[in-house]
Image 1 (tube, rainbow, N blue to C red):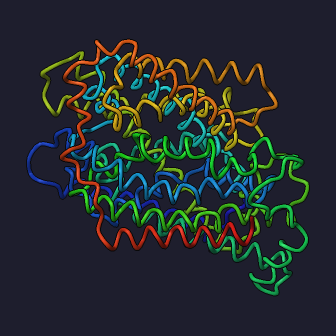
Image 2: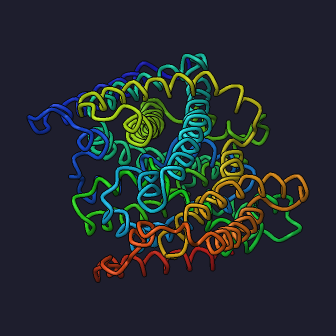
Length: 523
């Protein structure tokens, strides 16, 4: 094994501390029997710092750390656009989407679609999200997490996946979202500190002991192509990140779908004390997001120098961890596990929320709150078991898991974004238009992929999005008599306040200024 006794001891201390904190938080709730609002939305009591930390901890997982580092190994800093564009997206979500969702007092994204359209739209999207969370997100996190454990410690991959699943359930299944969100504060601190330490040591090794900045200078001098943020059309990796389309095309669709309408992300904001608290949490998360490439992508670029002959790009981050000194290796390993189990817990909680509140509660009506909470816990366990069984068949043959995840979800995200954006901001959008957008998104994505294989997937996402807008608008206008009074009323924005505080506006301007500087320097 590559982990020393000291490293293992550090990890064990972390695990015990995390489980102890989760148990403490879970036992110190109100004395009444835990209901669905307590379990799925943390009693709507989360403060901004817990929301922001939990957003990042839920987002940054194995597919982010290992997968994006692997993409950094191959593509370079350009892959950071996913993170930096997400920071701006979060600001937009906080200003324009959260006021609508919180006003409608919802538990889930499908629930909003039922309020806005009808049960058909809700059910279609609920089933879709359940499938994606289990067969794409959970499988990716488990597979890459198991791969990391195997590379670092020598533990069998399957054993590693089972450990991750049991660990995430141990601290999240009893306390629900509240336990997940508050323990995420520890997770994100450990994640950022451990990640930055790995970056420092990796760059120092590149410079052969002359320091981090010297190492960074060597990378920019010897690997200039790895620091191009906007690829030209003759770049061999143009298909992955197609030039200016990264800034004005399909990536916006991907990011808006993920940060605005993704249950296991937006659920933290839905659990806020109030709108202002949610918006402060969103802004906090946006600034944390800017940091991510510096401790995820940059180590992947350093690995090009330190490990030039890797068999798989996704081995870059775990391989770097083997270079860490005793003690620090245990800390960085704990940070990686922290990211993985946090995302697993968040995804399982969201799967159980959608299944219980959007599907099961409509089949088994008028059951007790305790009954629904129990069902949610059972669903979490089943989701993990299914994901473990599916992980190797689905992901075992892919070199860059992060790019695989992005391309797969890109088949469906254009329709999702169209349904929500038109549903929120265009009164004449109806359920026929929503269903047509959902079905057209998948059909057109597969059609364009087969007919135009050379078209970069991100450009395909943008084109399919525009097609879905046209189809949804046309179908809604043709069938406008089906647009019920209920649908027109729920989209009313007259009493929704989109004004944000001065501090929020200043923070938003800061995000834009920082990202403008980054793209100017490396564009």
